[in-house]
Amino acid sequence: MKTGEVESAGVSGEEAFRTEASGIGDREWYVKGLRDGIPIAAGYFAVSLALGIAARNVGFSALQATAMSGLFHASAGEYVAITLAGAGAAYIEACMMELVANIRYLLLSFSLSQKLKTGTPLKHRLVLAYFLTDEIFGLSIRVPGFLNPFYSYGMITVASPAWILGSLFGVVLG
Image (cartoon, rainbow, N blue to C red; front, side, top):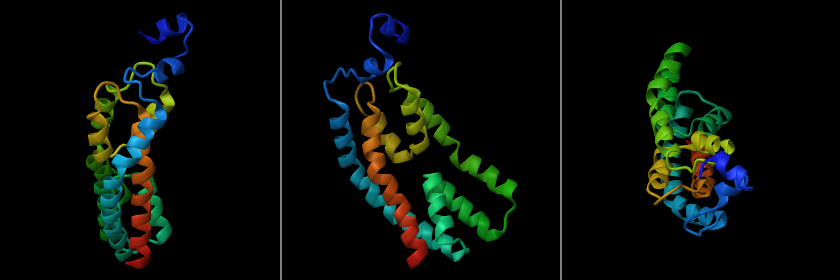
């Protein structure tokens, strides 16, 4: 059922989006995502701790390293930024390398968007695209049928703070 058909049937796009063939609601998907996100969070904390130490070694402040982790959500991108900053690279070099290091997320986003129902609101699509990582993509894409964004939100709720806190601890304690 397309969005126009849904609305003409007296059901808004948001209501159609909420209707799950599996019978599992948003809360259950979110809790499942929280559980599945715990191992991701453990791995993120360890990797971002090392990146925080590296950031400190090239002169990043705690605020800079933590803000970078909150904005990037990508270890390869952060590693490139830290390495280039330490080497005194020009901003244009850093931007080009970030583009090369992170272009895969465009492809991952396109692929994941195919798992969303046609009526999935833009706000959900934007949040998923912003917080998309390799690990969250890997678990989200394997969900049978359509992806309920709340599953990914559960993983993000656990994994993203672990990533940011790992960087903070690394730069402060490193």
